[in-house]
Length: 284
Image (cartoon, rainbow, N blue to C red; front, side, top):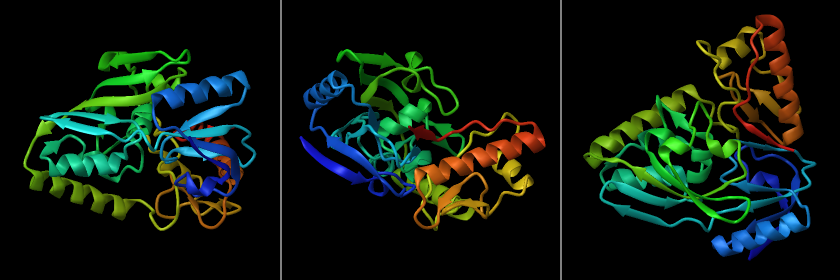
């Protein structure tokens, strides 16, 4: 099994964070994955399944290991049913389905996540989300058993799913899409990309929206209202273009980002009475 010791975090998170992790493993298949997890448990070593690191903040002092499922990338398209492994890039899948005349993932073409990470987070954009297309998910439980979850079992919510609350590893998903003219699908993807470029800061590394939008409110508007646009801790800075984005404008660490998050939460709570809930995940 391929592994890298003292791996640079910046190579595995979209934040491009400074720091290292003890080790990253790249299992080839389910058997290797099960064996690896069993060994880590026996040695009482912390581990985290890593997608594309597009919603993850890793502290520079994290003392566990990462398991990246980049080799879990098989794809089968049968009519309008798509069976795809969790390590497949979501943006790549959206474009592949578009070229095959399958609609439903237009929203996903600009999301820099793996399929597994997107389901874990119930990622979404432009009014659509993963729960709209997922039929079932195959996962590995903490005892090494394979479990198939139907859509109704996944407890999807706003940036939420059963996988955020149970020790499960997403291995594969079955998606149901609809047939549509490829050119029309690609046109919609192009429009979404243009909207993203217009509204989101893409000049520096980030991990997308930092906070969930409170009911009836906009997290970005609240952060801007309390005067924190452009505020920074080290090289972690609140975007001047969209205040619900934190940018790495140099060599920011996970610790810098976390300190800035806490400052934002405290100031917004103090001045508006609203508690901002984190959308991104902190690995400690």
